[in-house]
Image 1 (cartoon, rainbow over the protein chains, first blue to last red):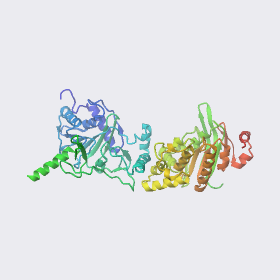
Image 2 (spheres, chains in turn green, orange; image 1 turned 180 degrees about the vertical axis):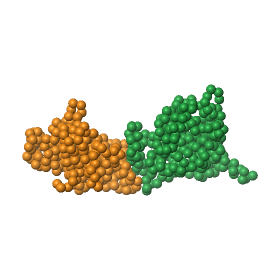
Image 3 (cartoon, rainbow over the protein chains, first blue to last red; image 1 turned 120 degrees about the vertical axis):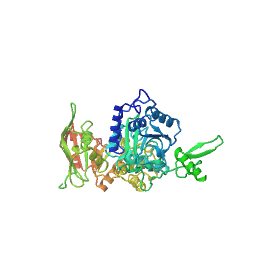
Image 4 (cartoon, rainbow over the protein chains, first blue to last red; image 1 turned 90 degrees about the vertical axis):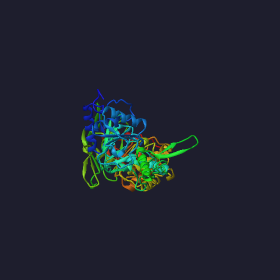
Length: 281
Length: 258
């Protein structure tokens, strides 16, 4: 597109963001501040993720964008088209074809590879923000690895409800050192972060923070020895492809109580249906 | 007293602008000993407590702490992480207002368990058992383990704060007017509890109080402060029954006799 630099952001800004990314990769789970720019879409729509994607994207890349696992939602379509126009890169909905995947609220079901980058959109990068209002204090807690407070929150959940009640944005310890918010992905996706071959980058535009998990890094969900972390999913099979191992969305189908459980990862669901169709023919 | 000291302050001075809060204070505390710091308001008691516990940096002088291995540390030269670790394991702090120390939005059990979890305890059942045990030790009904502190009375809050502080078996506890603001019968019960626990666990206590009766009941030794200076120090009974310094005489004689 005329009048715009490749990938919308100017090269100086991309360099600044890449420096932040390099530092974030060097200190897994540590939040690195960066000079977040105004983007042509509102905060909360993925301004952080877009800036990270723009900075790692090259002309040879293939981009996939998902929102809640789906390729066809407004947010995903808009961001995909944004980069198709401003960078002219190839876009795809197939997880295995993409070299850069920007995501909101999900990790694709298909196992990612070493040559792929997963970019998360993050609304609130600070895992302790709801427990400790002062940012100066949360920084000190991170510096001293003083995470008793988060464990108290888990204790309270078990004492009152019999189990940990966090269903998304479930806090993780990265590389045995930093407590990290995995962004609002379901707790179901947390185990996928552990030892993932792909590079995971997190961008928070409004809060101006970037953090990262390098490939094959130890990522543990917080828990107690006698109350281990358990990933939960709706106890159903996907109504379209029949998958019993994927994360499901509940879709209301009519106004008489009709419900359908379907894979939230649309690409995973479609590829499974294609495989079964091909086998039937 | 051949045993080495636990804490020593040497030549500690601190001024807030023109106000000289501490002037050349010397102080020793031995393991298992209860030391009361008495004096009127503004005499520098609480400032001294904050300086010794590393929360305030003195202008001059040093505070030494001997760790369980017998190594001496200059409290104010310690790096932040080490001081913080000390504060959540070997040391404890009991505030006059328990709301400053307790988390009011967290249940009693969570409050007691926090220091254990901060030290790395990751077994829910063990943490809960320790919380129940400590609630019993401070005479709070264990059935209230899942209640919020805001449903507790003032005396119960103070006892909960003590349970929360002692759960990690600290060697040294700083107490700032632990019975202030409580009615007399609750005070008596709390003092009795503190005395029993401290003696049984052999905890050293540095106690700030303006109440001579509290000092007499709890303390082995007493330090009398006036205008930022230590004016008299000695065994509790000795100082209170035979005060030498004019200010101490005034302080002792001004106590109302019931």
